[in-house]
Image 1 (tube, helix red, strand yellow):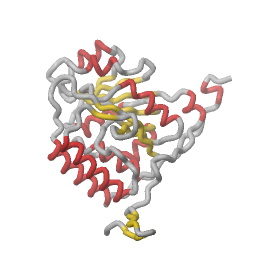
Image 2 (cartoon, one colour):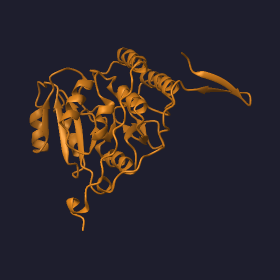
Image 3 (tube, rainbow, N blue to C red):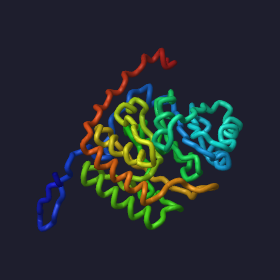
Image 4 (spheres, rainbow, N blue to C red):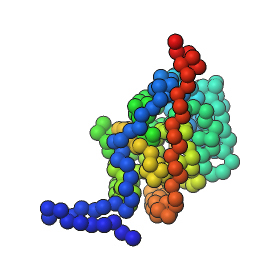
Length: 277
């Protein structure tokens, strides 16, 4: 099965294999979520004791919950996290890989909104308000983009940039999306959509899996500009070629998988329950 190509006014147009909702469209939210959604931030970490002070310093104080998923660190990652934020919730990872860590962290969240950031200092917690704002104004799933106006990166090599462009284009053709930055891990979404996302992978391909399942599930997706910084301390476990092939395998595998239906938005609580006169 291949995309349908047609000619119009001398130009070739490609019809996507699947029609997905455009990323600009939003669904309305109920009043109680617009007034006071609670926010959980998930931080997967392994041996990031040196980086956590920089990461936690960018996290807004109004965040309701920080979930640190520890990948069996051999340094002081957990102790540093507790010192920086005494109320941090620690989840010990039983499996391996970023995908497994995020799944464990998501399962432990209690907030209305879930935000995922990296523990190496490459994602800026100051941007969380932009993600939350897009969700409150109607998006179901918000993804950061280094290529959106106002975004950027200090850490994109030629191989990573080229591979990301190819894989992003492939997903856009196959799934009818309008993504500009497929392989970037700064995302946020309403917790009620966890069943749609249904993480079942281990590695860095989790970022692609989230984006594809959000589209297949009919979620209203919005991109916001984000600036990626270089890792502050230590070395990344990302391997462009190896992980690129895992991403490609994930894209093709998802084509055969049936999407999970979107859950309806919960009804608004009575005004008295929200403390509203």
